[in-house]
Length: 183
Image (tube, rainbow, N blue to C red; front, side, top):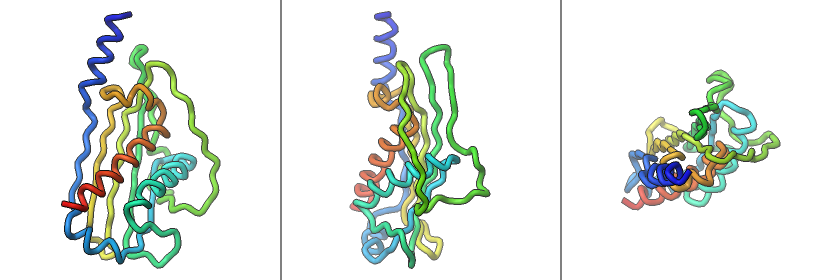
């Protein structure tokens, strides 16, 4: 048991989550103040769409002018998928992509009850979040690809559900947007 704990700790300390971004800097700094940005979310699940929308609105709303009513000049598209892995016999369950592209983007407005599910011991998330900020003329102002590997970093001990992973990633991406905008 002690060897298992030491092995898991070593894996957690290794840290394999990655984030890649492009854009930002002077372009975003000069354009952003005049923008009216619509948030659009796609997860593959109605309840998760609403939850990720609220999490993203809370975090990104602090760092960019998100609006829920037209007219819009830009959009922030967020796509999220997650899989749950367990330390027991390599079990996996996947979340995301269930509805397909035909259902479109969630843009707020409808009430959906969502609750956080609870995780189990020795369970973690592997999640991906893509965020793209586009001007209405199609120009990409900023984009990010965050690959969260919960089994490989310390936060994985407390991030056991897709909801918790989405909360952590939106917070980290909003902070990264701020850093990229100052370059």
